[in-house]
Length: 469
Ligand SMILES: Cc1cc2nc3c(=O)[nH]c(=O)nc-3n(C[C@H](O)[C@H](O)[C@H](O)COP(=O)(O)OP(=O)(O)OC[C@H]3O[C@@H](n4cnc5c(N)ncnc54)[C@H](O)[C@@H]3O)c2cc1C
View (spheres, rainbow, N blue to C red):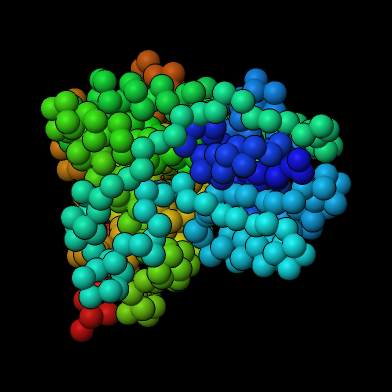
């Protein structure tokens, strides 16, 4: 039988993988292929590094089942056509992505392959609900989260399909690049070694994470999730973004816990729907990725330069402990607590009156859980320019927020070494992660605030009022 190419993208898993299951159901040999094209090459430093580690683990997982991950670099359509001619494959299957660049690429690939008689099929699996299947009563899309949550909360989501025990191989696998030659961690420089121990890579790690969360954290999740020094969330964003676990698997685990009386798991399911909401918005209004969702913000006098204050923000040196701790946490671990994300985004866009796109781009470079839809929605939410956004006049005070959500004062010292007699290991690891060119040392004095909180707040509110007057 002629083989089928399974085009691997953000679906580095065997379980609940619709495209892979469809090939297996056909009984034909499978050639799993990952293509390092412009969209992969253009990823931020941390995301690209993390993607490479995910590929390494997935290749091993496939190898255990007698299969092989074929790696090729180049334009996706050209690579696929080349592989079809090398292998005689008669079909290409993949799981869908939803950002405009991937959609444009995939549409071109599908129509071109069909035009040469190749069966080209795409499948759902990166989301719980295909964005076009969720509609308001009047037939539009949701612009506010809560009604969308109410609309999908009780929907049936197909049960996850277990991992196959066998992935039939072709008689011969085509040649593959060597993953090491792609050097996907190169842009991380010395930061890669610091970040690596904080990652939990691969499908087995993701499944363990989900099980640990449901067993130990879900009950207290509604309150713990807000406390940045408490390990109270699932940590699954890192795995969901590379598809190492399906959202349906998380959803079903959440609902099973709710049915066992763990009511806190409902908030977890609700958060999964925030991810869906972000995708829903990106599908219906793709400009959310690069322009103010509410065009009324186009005239707002944002700073768009890397000013000394913005550089201090990037380096975790604003002199505001919540902001600096969160920025350093991201630099060291590739992850930032959700409350930290809200605080640093509010501080950049309001106290520093800097365009949300500068923060969005910095997150894109530093996060291992970078997700185009959630990142854009999060930034526009914080800035006030997005749908269902935090109003601009609601300006988080990072000092009161820290004392409210970290009453024992643990979070800042775990990431800020300056001024501490016995700095924590995590705070010191920041100095091993950052570029030497930043010239920072733990012996530096902790900086004075780059802008007074009251002054920054007043300046932002004045600009806001001038805009709306
Ligand atoms: C400015 C800003 C930028 C953000 N950028 C990203 C990003 O690039 N990638 C990303 O995955 N999330 C992003 N988020 C959302 C959120 O901060 C993370 O999803 C969350 O911190 C991940 O931790 P967790 O997996 O432990 O989440 P949990 O609390 O365990 O939640 C479970 C899952 O629900 C989803 N989720 C939770 N909160 C949100 C949310 N606010 N928006 C969308 N989905 C959510 C995630 O998939 C998460 O893994 C951003 C938020 C803000 C305010």
